[in-house]
Structure formats: C-alpha cells, structure tokens
Amino acid sequence: MDSRIRAPFLKDGVIGQRHIAHRIPLSRPFVGLEEKAAVLRVLDSGMLAQGAEVAALEAEFAGLLGVEHAIATSSGTAALHLALLAHGVGPGDEVITSSFTFIASANSILYTGARPVFVDIDPATYNIDERAVEAAITPRTRAIMPVHLYGQMSDMDVIMSVAEKHGLAVIEDAAQAVGATCQEGQAGTFGTGCFSLYATKNVMSGEGGLVTTNDDRVADRVRLLRQHGMRSRYVYEGLGFNYRLTDVSASIARVQLRHLDEVIGQRRENAAFLSGTIRSVATPQFAEGRGHVWHQYTVRLNKDHDRDEAIHRLAEAGVDTGVFYPRGVHQIEHVRAAAGDHHLPETEQAAREVLSLPIHPALSKEDLATVAAAVNQL
Figure (cartoon, rainbow, N blue to C red):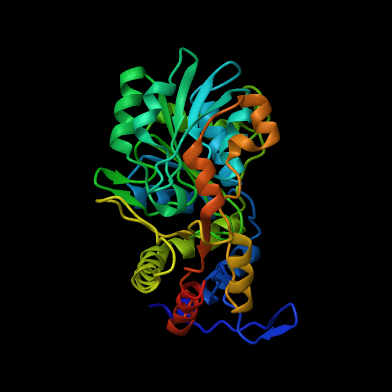
C-alpha cells in the first residue's frame, strides 16, 4: 500500500464540551507529493485549460475502461447533462431513474426539459429495482438512467435488455462507481457512462467529470456541446456550454487514476473488516458477481435506533458519519413540481434508516476498530 494512503491522519476537534484528540473523518481526499508535482508542472507550462493534460486523462480513462471515447467535463453533473443531450433527450421526453440518489441525477434531466420518472429501489443494494423499470416505460420514454449507488453496479444485463427491447438510450450514472464491475463488464461501458471527479470520489480532482461511450456520434456531440457548440474557433453550430475541465484538475486525476487499484483494494479491506466486526446494525449487502468499490459504507439502522441519536453518539466517540440520502429526490420540492407524485416505499424507508461510516483508505486499523466498537455500542 502506498504510504501516502496509509499516512497517519491526526486532527483535533471538539464535540460539545468533549475534546476529541483524534477525529475519524467520514471522507478524506488524499493528495500526495505526486499530485502536487503534477499541479506545479501544469502551472509552469502555461497551458491551464483543456490542453495536453485533459487529452491525456481522456486517453488513460478510455484505456482503463476499454471504451473508444472518454470526454472530460467540468463536473459529474455536466457529464450527465451532456450525455442526455447527446442522446437527444429534451422537452416532452421522460427518463426513468432512481430517486435514491444525489440531486444531480434528477437535475440533469430537468436541465434538458425532460421529466424524471422514478422507480423504487432494491432494498438490498439501494440501486434501481431493475424488475420495475419496464412497467414505467411510456411512449414518451427516451432513456433509462441507472445509478450505481455507493460503488455497486446495477444489474446492467436486465437494464440493457429492456432498453434494447424498447429502443431506449442508457445513461449510466457512475459518479460513485469508477472501477466497479459486474459479471458483464465495468461501470460506464454498457450505455453512455458518466463519472464524477469530485473531491470525495475514489478518483478525484477536486471537481470534474467524464463521459464514456463507444458511440462516435455521441462522443462528437458531447465534445461539441461542452465548448459552446464550437467545433472550430469562433464557428458555432448551435447553443453549447462552458463545461470544460482544467489541466490542473486533469493532472490531479491522472495521478489518482494510477492508484485506483490500490485505493479500491484498501476500501474493500476496510469494508470486510467492518462487516466482519459490526453486529448491532445491518451491514451492506452486495449482489453476487458485483465488484463493489465502496465509495460509501452504508449501514441500516433498525426500528430500535434513533438516527439523530446514533449520529450524536458516534460523534461523541470521534466518528464522523453521513446520511446519503435523507430524502428521496422525488420528495424535493422542485423535482416533485416537475415530475409529479411518486409512491416509492422502499426509497422512503431507506432514506429514514441509512447511515454511512468512514471507509476511506487513510483509516488505520485502530480507526476501523474504533468505528466498529462505537457502532456496536448503539
């Protein structure tokens, strides 16, 4: 394991009146000497925006996934927006997706003028219930957007079969799932993949995203739209966006990408320890044949636990936590106004019960033991 990942992390914090000498953060972006050197190299080059570093990141990411094209964007949200537009999604269309996700999944659909149609989740994996997708298809449906939540892929065999049967595009929201696999392949290689390089992700640059595809037409459209609809300088083919990635961000992501295997390996090791040690709450499940990359390690509290109280008690023990997500996206006001009412009991129950624990590679064995012991005291 790279010493930059296992370096000790000490930070003082105060919870109420209690002094915590060593807080265990929920996430910690890891930035080492390699990333710092890469940034300085870009700054010294004088080429800061969508230059050689961006092109190299795109080539390396495409090579990692074994796809024809990877197009860098300014964020994961921008990647989703451009992917939808490249597939012709627009006003009057519908896109089937999960409500148990970050707001960007729904917002990107709304940006196009289309309507999100939400399908409930599989309570075991928190991913979209693939068996319910086909029943949600209408004459207006243009695309299916599965969300590979927490680092575990959806059942893409089922989703691709339904999409092909009905002639629908598939946009994979793989923001949390770089490196994740299933029996059929990697995240981002089935439909059009969309990834995030946000600071908490397993490969990060602070902010950024990528679109992956084997479709030359889709790739061309994404490239055109990310730069103001401009294929050659000052020649515009229509309305576009400023969704470009900087070379500074790309240089960080390139270093991070080289360490992806070890980062995933450490996250898997940490997850195995927690799942083998925690007894007081339901630990995460994953489907057979899935290669989970553990962007989040999310337990499920039972009816005897008050989540706010659990969060407070863990904080007193020096353990940071997160709730991803406290409401289904279908319950958020502006989404509900556009999408209408949806009855999603599994999504709503999960939103009341989930709690994410630290899983990142900078955790020491002592940190992991502290996390597990604190959870077992709930």
